[in-house]
Image (cartoon, rainbow, N blue to C red; front, top):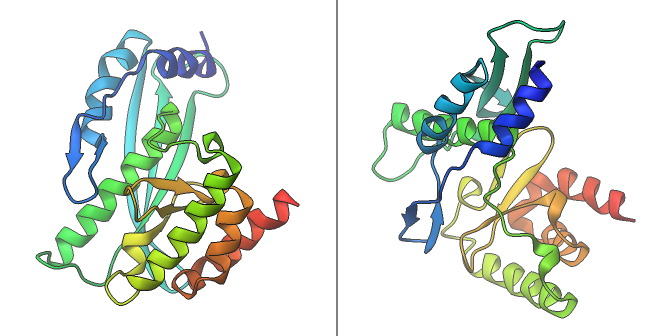
Length: 213
């Protein structure tokens, strides 16, 4: 069994429940530790090991934690014996009640979670395309207005974040769920493009608008 076959088996068998609750956003989620604990025995079963590494990098003048999730075939079968996935999380300049090390640690946890989630195909997001067209447009309009009202109180780290590859996630202020730009319908993308709060990610938004045309 090569590394690709092992990864497929592990992806099919890993189950990591969203057994933690965000009291502020009122949504359930899973953390990196939950994913690691679920993956370890399955990796052992198929002769593989999951390795996590991260480092601080600079993107557009801002500090990010870049995390790499790597699945390694310890039986070394085939020329390719490792597969990896990358996740990013921006380190905020400040956050109430946290010192610098805690800010970095928090970003590291986020980045590691999204790197390993991408590798194991675990998804935290609802599919926006499951919404009726009218609801999509209304929610996009509501989201833009809500973001304007909260502009003075929210910073970029709380409303958007860079994840693996060239994708970005934006938080829906209504339900606290994170939605990828690559999964957003056109009305949502256009609303983000016009919103000053997301000026820093307009290039990302434009890319997905152009792809959808």
